Image: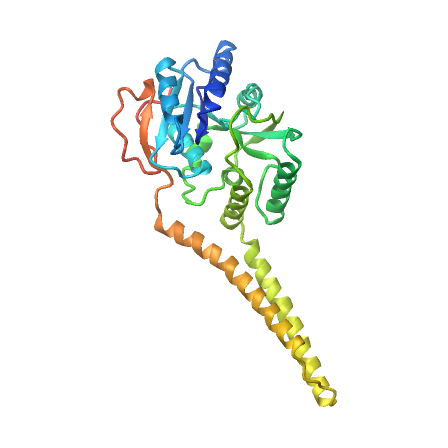
Length: 338
């Protein structure tokens, strides 16, 4: 019976309060899947330390020494959640058959992993974890999150509604994903672009077990801007449409003013002139700002800076591996795929 080798990829940033709790949950789930003979016994839990400033990395090191199922990598500095997830996926892709990425806070139901693995065995290469219920979120968090998905969809970004970064991905998909070289990452919008057979698994979202969220409204807005400007040109097209509309209105205004002047009914006006100038000036600055955002993204892409840099590794699979401190966003194989 075929049993895929699974790596559970867990990005961590300042998670010293919740990690001791959720690490046991992940291990129990991994051992349960192994006991049920759904996955290979060499499966691992891969923690990705995203430049934490607390004891997160020390906890990961201790866990790896206590149990061989725990392994970890640490980035040289904090680079953001999306790049931490990417680092873990690229680290795992040549060592396993499937990966499941999940946040460290315990809000995503780990029991959904059973169905994810089943869907993979049934032929799906990507399995999205979708939140069926967000009643544990505050009204503000729930409203802004749902508005986020609807707005992204309206802007032309292909998304799975209410899916974040809890997903199963096969190594075959990850091999294809390596051709996506962009620096500005929005993973939940990029994986649908890869293709392959996919499905969704639904689960109820829980409250955070401990600590505070690291994704406030400001980061959510930043993620939305990254997603829109990285995966859609609709804002540029909206600017074009707005320019055409204002030009049409201005042309009509010119005809009207000339007609009034010829009929001798013109009256000198200050308020209307100032209002028109302010309106047009504001629209121009807004449009320039949107275009500037795209130019900034192009600037970052052209520089081709590394998306992540791994400074340390811990775990039994790395014990006899060569030093890889110089890795810069590209994975270098250090062990054979099981």
